[in-house]
Each structure stands twice: as structure tokens, then as C-alpha cells.
Image (cartoon, rainbow, N blue to C red; front, side, top):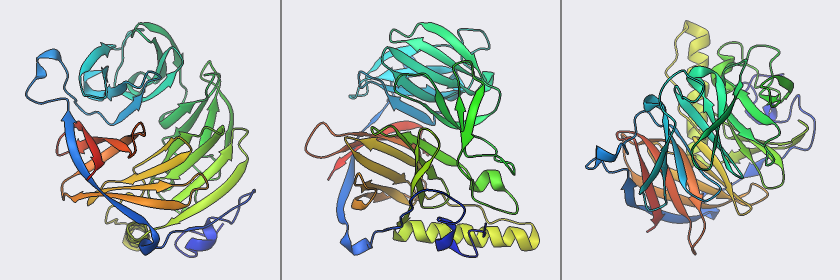
Length: 339
């Protein structure tokens, strides 16, 4: 397979089975909507109730539309309503059966949540009252994971991708790997870095895989068959990919790297539409149609030191509302609406 820096257009179709498509999104053709931050929570002025974030990088809507945040360094899950009011705290820091150590991805199901308990290398289940149920031991380290709608299996993206590995492991209910699928991008070095991905389970029971450092989206059937592959052609995405290409070439020639710029910081689906986020140097959220064609761009004010890890989308009103998990300079949830 050709490396991505030799033939970047052909890379997305070489070596894969299934239909492929390249998405073209001319910048001038998109409808631009300015974003304005309307609120942030939790308030740094009211820490007495324990509602402060410390190292939080993952959050998710519960089935009841509450916002559950993995408070990573505190070892618990904070649950807020959409107005930013703390409703409850789930779990506590520790190594015991009912405790969490560095909680990560949260995965809701019909009567509770699964939590990727990274530090204890397991998945912990809580009911909708926050009471612990069971835990599932993991046998590998994972960056991202999602459960299917009946919680019968988990799709997980490994933290490292060695030669011969796949992008996604399918985990059974006991944590064992039942199968794996998805060809990684081919690199001579640093394969695990360039193959970092985010996962999104669609309402059509397909798995969407988004590459962090490249504008590439893949749709897989839950059987592991590649359905389609897309490249989002957008100015900031192209510029960041070009920078990452230069960084990779520098590392090959003199064993140095300039650092990498993320392309896709998060991906979400809501009501048949897809949204992808990039947070630097300004908040940018692209709205994609059900066929992954870019339709709108939502752009926030430029903030040089602003970085976000994840986002949620609420489509209850005429315009979307975005909940953005800021990791720097503050660790908080910012609420953005249309200006």
C-alpha cells in the first residue's frame, strides 16, 4: 500500500474492499453560521458541591439527555442537566470493584451507562441511579469505544496499531476479542499515532471511523465490511494535513517531528446528520448530510489558546446547540448557539 504522503488521493481507495467516495466541499459553497458562547459550566465560583472538572476529556448524553462527564483525575462521573446544574456524582476514585481510576469514554444504554475505566483496564456498568453493577475486564488498551444498541458487543479502537493489527476490535461481553476489522494507514514509523481514530455508531447500525490527523471518514457495516470511505475537502483540514505530512517527512530524514495538528477532534450524529469538530485556532463544526456531504460550517471566535476534546449536539430547537468540552485554558463545558 502506498504511503499517504506519496499519493494522498489514492491512499483512501487502495487496499480496501467496498465502495469508496471522495467528498468535495468547496469552501465558498457552504453556508456559514457564526457561533456565540452563551454559557459555561460548572462554575469555578461554586466548587462546594464537588462540581468541578479535573482532566475531563470525554462526555456523553445519557438516554434521558443528561450530560455525563468522565472526571478523569477525580475518578468519578459528574451528571448535569442541559442547564449546567449538577444532578449527581457516580462512582469514586479507587481500584475496588465499585470504583473508577481514570474514567474515559461513557457509553449510554437503556437503563444506565458503561464507563471505560482506563486505569483499571475494564468497562464498568452503572444503572440509571448511579449504582454499580458489573465490570468487564479488558485485555488491551483502547482509546475509544462504543456499544451497539442492545449492549451485546463493543467496538473498540486500540491505543496502539502494530503491523498486522486492525483499527477496530469487536469485544464480547466478557471482554475477549471476537473479531477485528479495518485496515490501518500504512506508515514506516509511528503507526499508532497516525492511526488514532474516533468512533461513532450511526442510527443505520453502521460504524463511522474518523481519523484524528487526516480528513478521512470510513463507514463500516457491523460485520466489519467497509461500506464507503470519504475524504473531506475543506481548507483548514487540508492545511493541517499538509503540516502533518511535512512533520512525517522530517521525522524520516532526521528523526525529528514538528508535532501534529489534529484534523478531526470529534464526530457526532444527530437526527440523521453528522457533525465533525476541529477546535484550533477557532472552534469549527462542519455539518454533513446523511451521505457525508458538507452542508454548513459553524464557526466560533478565534481563541489562540482554546482547545476542545469532544462535543455534543442538541437539535431540539430551530438551530443546533453545541456543548463543547474545553480542555484548555479551562476544563469546562461551553454552550454555543447560533449568533
